[in-house]
Length: 217
Image 1 (cartoon, one colour):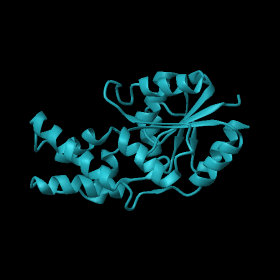
Image 2 (cartoon, helix red, strand yellow):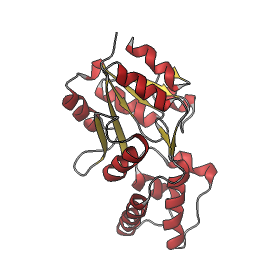
Image 3 (cartoon, rainbow, N blue to C red):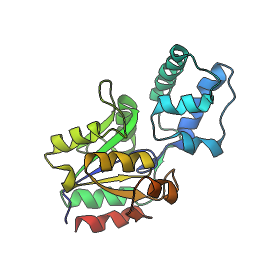
């Protein structure tokens, strides 16, 4: 089947944001005298959104939801100011996107990251015209693995989920795609192991971005 559109996860799929997210999480942890996280731990925190990341980083040291909400608010505010320090797109991603655009395939970004930050990062790294839709986390729409946001993207693009590819690097992305009826393809260059994604039900994997082109021929 020749697919007509694609949804891309952001962190760990299109771009490597780990160092910048670690920097800002540690800024907040240090501000409130909590232990900082290491580079070895950051990847396991990513994928569920910034609140989930900082909650895990706290490792149970703070259980007051109001205080956690304060930390999340401050994290989002600091991150938004300058979200691209070391963040960069993965090798071949720029070529992949250009090739897909040449075929007139519609492409979208879907992230659990705060929408304003998602949009700003995309604008800085890829410009304002690369993607047909950019969608981050917004109030009132449940986060992944709930497929609501992905289904809204499909509706706006005018395609059924069955006509669309969903590329992601995590078990969360796999579950989101399957819950929504999308064709899921797992990116093996991101933040999860092949086993972690396979355990969530993934059965199609690519190790290099340009391999995705084969699904549009």
